[in-house]
Length: 285
Image (cartoon, rainbow, N blue to C red; front, top):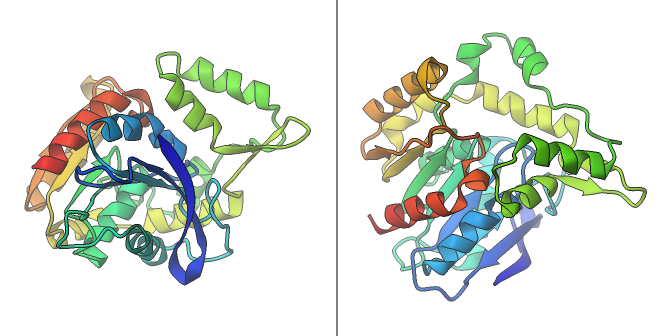
């Protein structure tokens, strides 16, 4: 069973949270989505973790999904402070049996890495799902090039039925939880068209902060165990990612790596049960 609640982030802004198994006796898991995504991408993984006894909370970060959409606060400092406030609201605290494993995907993995550095007591361990190791500036030395290459597609005004058909066509092997979670990235308006919950301007603001982020400067500062969960396609296509993973493995004090190959970027949507088993193991380590 999942309960949707609104909890307070930094400055009291409303953060929409999906909460599974609140009374579970296992290690709590806080799940953080990627850029322009939403909490529902974690539905399949969270439900499987709940079955294994874990309380799970998946949050719509500010500007995303059903959460508040202020004009500012999209920097790493504020977003990680939102997560700390959220944990306090949930009663998940260091030194207790409610000290969580925090897992992030894509940009969310960078957020979780930053959380472990800025707030060393916030997590008992962290998991970085296909994110947190690649530095965009190494691929795009100029911000203008990164912006041009990575700006979001224009989806506003597309028919909801066409959007759903495109999602299903792109991901024929995903379970229904992953499809539904992806569809929840957008608002369906009364006339049957869609609009992304995250505005284009805020998307680009976050992308700029991500381009400026230097994960390699953080690894030596991380004091908790780290699980790296990269997605690969196999062969030479993964060369750059394998190099970034190797750098992280060398610099992190306590780290283990589990590749998903072949896999899409949204491992949590595509392979929810397998990822839940991996996180369950990490929570007990």
